[in-house]
Image 1 (tube, helix red, strand yellow):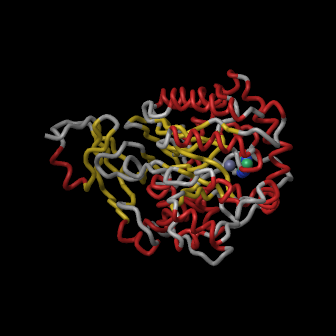
Image 2 (cartoon, protein in one colour):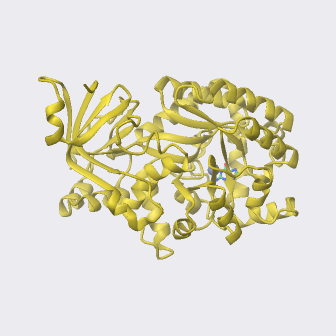
Image 3 (cartoon, protein in one colour):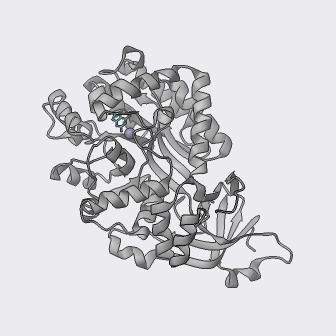
Length: 442
Ligand code: GUN
Ligand code: ZN
């Protein structure tokens, strides 16, 4: 008979399977207003209605009751920089000035192991208190930045992907390395962390402008030696950046072609931003099964541009949502989805709540080649999920009572929601975050 250690009752919402067109999402939507989820330690073993599942429970088996809450799969943040946590909201610059004036000085502090440890703890706590259970994370150029983050994620048994930045030009000397040093340090980190518990390594060249051809050749060598590791970088974010890449790599047909020539595209490659792609770059992303991280709060904050979600569907390019903290302005996926909606509005694209939650869960899992492990409540998957309180403030309660239908509830969470709506976060079947007790909203 089926083994289980935990029973959770509540209002469940997830997407049953990945889709290639947004019109197909409705057919995959699963909403079980009175549902049951059974876990065996960190694995989902049964999911269905309370009425069908109740008989599986031995007499007296403890059931955690979240019937007044909404339970969704843990959010997937497909692009974020943990060392930039302390510099969110840096005033006045677009990408290149922002990097020079704020980002590089902040990242220099991660040479200090103690600082990296403190910031790792703060960062992971921010993810969990915002319902994010998996992320693809940039470190700094310092290997100790990644050791600090991975060792703390391992203690939580989180599913996390991260890597040390690789860069050998166009940054302050303290943040530069030689291509050989970058290779050796990255290789040692892959051997230490990749595939340990639920951790994976992402080979992380910052972006083309901070990479010499010799560095990119070392990235390619690592890719060939560790074909199972991820590749994580930035692509086509800002017009000045794109012009710079064309000047630095005149032999390449496009920005993406700089990476593609070194074999850096592929099914485990994630490119953040992709705002100003040429047709051939879209086609190359599709052909190589590469993924995009769409980072709406960052794109608006740095004035980088408007991501074309409709085009991503048309070109069938896998897509996840990234907060891109610290260019992004929040860790919170609800707020990030609300900004994604507005980016759609500016281009006459209607981002439904169902599509938005898909990108933030199962779709994001697919973009990270993790859709066989996380992203919904299908038995066999890992037990990472969020218990949302759909109405915590007076305004949310007023709005919520006005239209309690699921689609409205989800959409209003994207519009009015924030970290207060995260009631509990589960990782590996265990509560890893619990909201503070709240006064009744006035
Ligand atoms: N391009 C190169 N580095 C960065 C970074 O740290 N943040 C963003 N948003 N874009 C980049
Ligand atoms: Zn970024």
